[in-house]
Image (cartoon, rainbow, N blue to C red; front, side, top):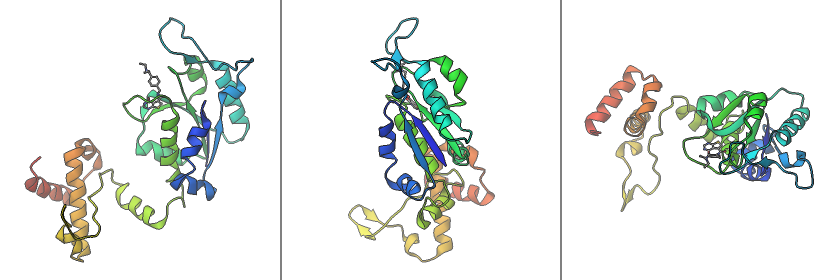
Amino acid sequence: MRIDIISLFPEFVSQIAGHGVVGRAQERALLSLHGWNPRDYAEGNYRRVDDRPFGGGPGMVMMIDPLRDCLAAVRLADPAPAKAIYLSPQGRPLTQAKVRELAAEPRFILLCGRYEGVDERLLAAEVDEEISIGDYVLSGGELAAAVVVDAVARLQDGALNDAESAAQDSFEADGLLDCPHYTRPVEHELGDVPEVLMSGNHAQIARWRRQQALGRTWLRRPDLLDEAGLSKADRELLEAFKAENPG
Ligand code: 9D3
């Protein structure tokens, strides 16, 4: 898949994307990232990309034409049609469902804003979708773009190693929080590893982990449980957890 990133700091995103799963996906040619700077499409000695907001007020607004010409160049660079996505606090919150949807596209474009944002006319004419990564204030869209790239890259076939893929299969599918994890030593000043994990009884271990995942989701993210579609066995495991751990 190809992702084009339009940003006044394109190297910011490629830096983050050089490491870990995203770097590996690029090495394996599962992913190609291309950075584009609207300043390269701006006119005049000053190569202005922003101007003062009509109506007054603080901050600056990104101008239409440098972004529009930059977008045209991005589209020309590859014939495959590409959705243009604007990263913005006004966007729909990113979810794993949206990540899966994007991961299935052959190509898309991420537009990162700076300052107060982008002239609304450019958004109306050129942008297909707006995405936010959550209800907190960032200084620009670049970190949000890096989040989208990371989440999408790890879903490309062959991007994860076997252990990572197995972990993905068991937990990502059902929308529950993860169970707790332990490693050596068995006994420690900070506490002992739960007995069941050393029992060698794989069915019992799987049951315990499922119950922990359900219980922690109930305690920390009850909103996720409503969407999870629990089986009768799940509901029984959760009731037993509640009986032992009153809220
Ligand atoms: C403090 C500036 N705010 C005025 C009330 C508005 C504002 C403008 C631009 C707030 C943040 C930003 C820059 N943010 C992003 O570009 C952004 C973002 C975010 O801030 N939070 C969550 N997701 C995203 S995606 C892009």
